[in-house]
Image (cartoon, rainbow, N blue to C red; front, side, top):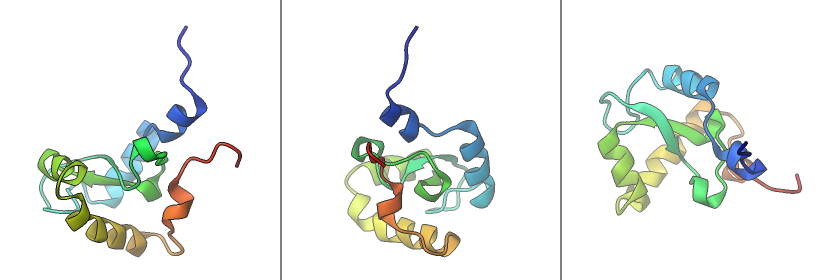
Length: 101
């Protein structure tokens, strides 16, 4: 039987979170407004980004690819502003897996 690490489990996006984010984002990509899926981490999984609604946004495949690639620096302020508008007190510090917390 395979067990994921605590970090891996914390960074996964549960179906319940995907459903909540998809509805919050109006079932559309927050960048271009096209059809999308709630599968993009603001703080990347590789950096310990948690799979919680405050760290997940809906993006279409094209915007997600761009966000994961060369356009990240250009798109990041828009994603950050969007999440801040949805969650009072939002802070990137709260979105990172910390082993001892």
